[in-house]
Length: 132
Figure (cartoon, rainbow, N blue to C red):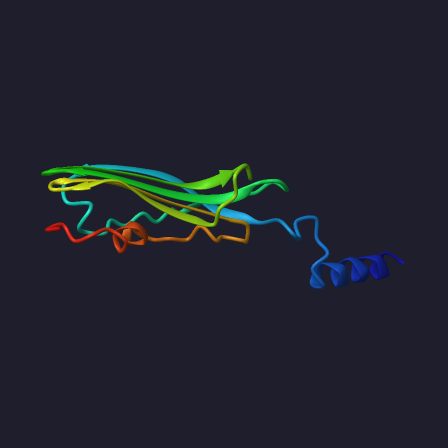
């Protein structure tokens, strides 16, 4: 009798009926870099950590670049967020002028591991050339 129960449990497991089915995960991490020319050269920002999303949470990724002359800072994050104002993707250029760039990118999504950008290139392709 016990052998039959084990076979039924195995069948349910193979069919995907596990306590963890339907659980969505996302990339998680923070990166802060100081340097120069981040508005011109992409910077890698892979994360090795993941986290499990709750039923009402969405995934997010954000990149902020401030580049003034020879000094730059890049702030990047990936993780979970609450679904307040939901917009898929947004790129904002706060300041673009001779020698100054301040821009941000964020993405909100609701599928498994969808916050998967691997570099700041997701923001850089929208910026004007540095000589403009």
